[in-house]
Length: 127
Figure 1 (cartoon, rainbow, N blue to C red):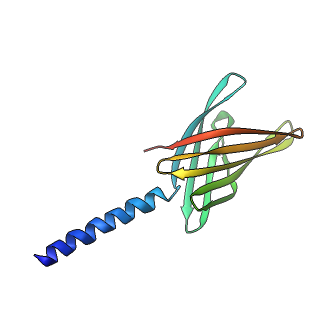
Figure 2 (cartoon, rainbow, N blue to C red):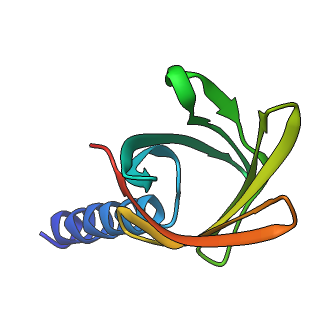
Figure 3 (cartoon, one colour):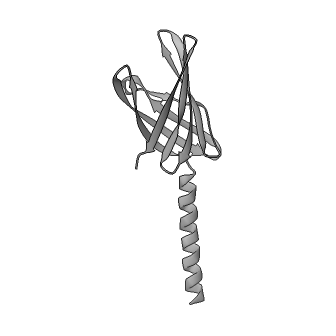
């Protein structure tokens, strides 16, 4: 009987640890919607955490994926940069957001023509 109880406790703890680790891992597909000049666009971000290295890609115009750069995940915060080119000019956007379960909520900052623009973003993990 003791052996059975011990097995149940170990299984429960293993399941709890696995669920806790999943909540602390940004790996997955994330989606949100942005609006620019009265145009709405769906954004998809694919992230993969391998050890302490975060990689991924974000959807862009014409459903073209752009690799994220300078990506990190530390203390529950996801951070990365997306570099896009427009009219021959490189435009970096820096994203930072706090992971909480199946939501990342944060801000993005873009500098274009010497003007910084900041906007909030909130992504939901796709199941």
